[in-house]
Length: 146
Image 1 (cartoon, rainbow, N blue to C red):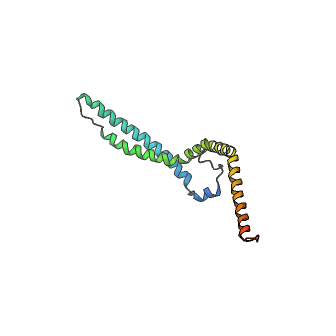
Image 2: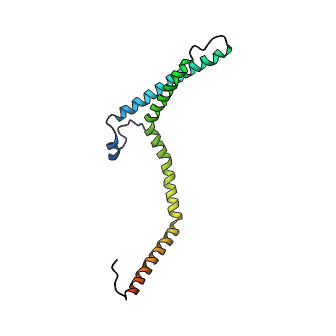
């Protein structure tokens, strides 16, 4: 997969207009912060749950159960940062996977519906000619301005 921060990757002028000047650094920050927050949240969540379930033997109360509540928002914000940080890469992957299928579908439909399109076009043209001829007949053969 091509690097998102690669400056040699071609970018259309329309896309350059949409991008912020610091977009590459923001993307890199979101990716790093997201992974760090996910790891920290996962460690807190696991630690809190281990403390909670180890207290089921009745010998002690769970001492670090509060870590599970700290881990939840860390996991949420880490996931959110990763979603926004990797959104462009995911969109390019999806486009690369689906564009060939869409092109094949359009080509197939164009080839398979050619006869029906020709039939409809001939019927429309015949209707227009008949309408023009009927208008000429009503006006005594004079030219009708459309």
